[in-house]
Length: 261
Length: 362
Image 1 (cartoon, one colour):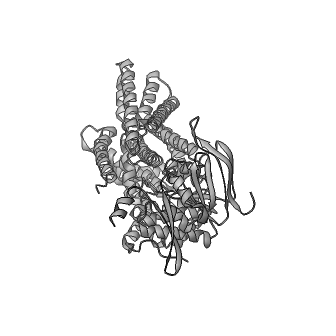
Image 2 (spheres, one colour):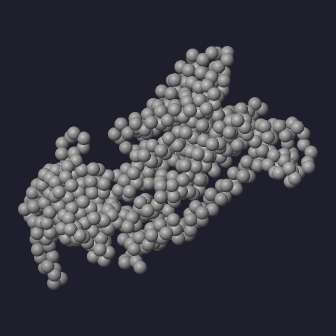
Image 3 (spheres, chains in turn cyan, purple):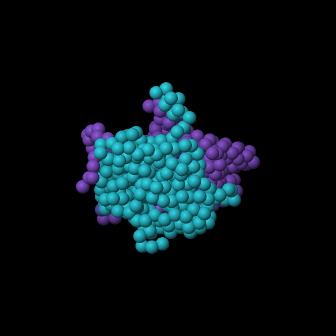
C-alpha cells in the first residue's frame, strides 16, 4: 500500500458465524481523492463490505488497510426522535467528544459549517424529519464530513431521491472529491450513476469475484450484463456538441412498448 | 462559504424556529424555578395547617447557622409536621420523580422507543420482587436495595433479550417483551405474598407494593439520595451519548461509538435508580414513561436537554400528584394508584399517536 492509496484489501472475506461465505477473495485498491462506485445485485453483500470498511465487522479472512479516517453516510436514517438537523450532524463528532463530555461550541461550529457547505445552515434548527429527501441525504453526508473524515462511504446516496435531487447528490459526490480532495466510495443500483461520476468501479460479479477498474472501461456491456444477468446496452451519442453515454437494460418489460412504436 | 444552494429552496419558517430555540434555551431554568415553587408550596400543604411564615422560620432554623436563625414562635407539633413528616416526604418524592424521569428518558433513548418505561419493561416488577424477598427474609436496608437492584436488572436483561430474539422491528416487540416479563414477576409477587406470614409480613408487603411516600423518613431519603446522585449523575454526564445510542448500531459504530458497553452501562444505571426508588417507596408506575414525553414537548428531543428536563418534570410531577393524593380524600391515596390512574390513559393516547404516525395517519 503506497502513500497514495486510501483503501486497500487483499483476499478479503466474510461469513457470519459458521454460515456460508458472503464473499471471499476480494481484492481492491482505491487511490486518494478518487471516486469509486460499488455495484452488486441485492443480497450480494454490499452492506457487509461497507461494514467491514467502517470497522463495524471484522473480516473473517484477508487483510484490510485504510489510510485516513473513514465515515459513513447511511442510505436512510430512521429517526426515532424528532432531532434537529444540527443534532444529527453533531453526532458525527462522536470521536472528538470525550465519553462524559458534551459537544463544545467548537463542535457546534464545525457542524454548522458542514451544513453551511451544503447551503443548509438556515435549516440547522429545523426537525430533520421535516426536511425533504434530498436535504436529509445532504444532512447525513454533512454528519460524515464533520467527523474530519478523509474517506467517505455513502450507502446508496441517490436511492430515495427524485430525478432532480439524484442529479444534485451526484454533483456533490463529484465535488467532494474534486474540490475537497476526499476519497469517496458509494454504492448504487444505477450503473448510469457510476458512469456519470465515478473514476473507478468495483463490480461484485460473484461470491469470489470482485472486478475493479476504471469506470469508462469496466462498465462494459459484457460486465454489466453478467453482473445483473440481463442484457445491458451502452450507447454513445452526441448531444449539445458533446459525446454522452447512456446505459439501459433490455429487459422483457421494455420490448412490447419498443415494438409498438 | 456555501458552494451552492440546497436541493430544495422553500422558505424556512424562521419565526417558529426562533420560538422553538427560545423554548429549548429557557425550558430548563423555568422548570427548575417551577420545581422550587412547587416544593415550597407542597411544604405548606397538608391536613395539619402550618402558617407559611412558620414553615419559612422552621426551615431557616434548620438550615442557617445559629447566629442567623430567626426568633419566631412556632409549636413543637408544627416543627415535627414540617421537618419530620413533610420535608422527608417531599425530598423522597422529588428524588424518586427525578430518578424515574432520568431512567425513563435514558431507556427510551437507548431503546429508540418512546413507548418504553421502567415499569413497562418489567424493571419495577423485578425490583419489587427482589424487595419483597428482602422484606420476607428480614434483610437490612442495604440488602433491600441490592436485592431490588438484582431483581430490576434481571427483568431488564430478560426484556431486552426477549425483544431482540423476536425478529420484528418497531415498537411492539419491546412492549410485548416487557408485558411478558412483568407478568412473570407479578406472578412471583403472588407467590411471595402467598408464602408470607399473614399476620406479620403480608400487610407490610402489600402496602409497600402499592407505592406510597406516606412512610417517608430521613433514613429513606438517605438511602435514595446517593443512588439517584450517583446513577442519575452518571446518566446526566452520558446524556449526549444517548443521542448516539438512539441510532442504529451500524450507524453509531460507524461514527466511532462503541455501543455494547455503553448500552449495558445505561441499562444498569437506569435499573439502579428504579431499584432504589422501589426499595424506599414501592412501585410508582408510569411516571418514567410519560414524564419524558412532557419533557420533549418543552425542550425537544436532544437528550442533552431532555435528561435534565425529565429529571425536573419528574420531580414536579410526583410532588404535585402526591399533593393531590394527600389533599383529595379524607384518607390519603397512595401515589402508586394515582400515577397508574393518570399513566394508563396517557400511555393509551401515546400509543395511539405513535401508531397513527407509523401508518402515516397524521
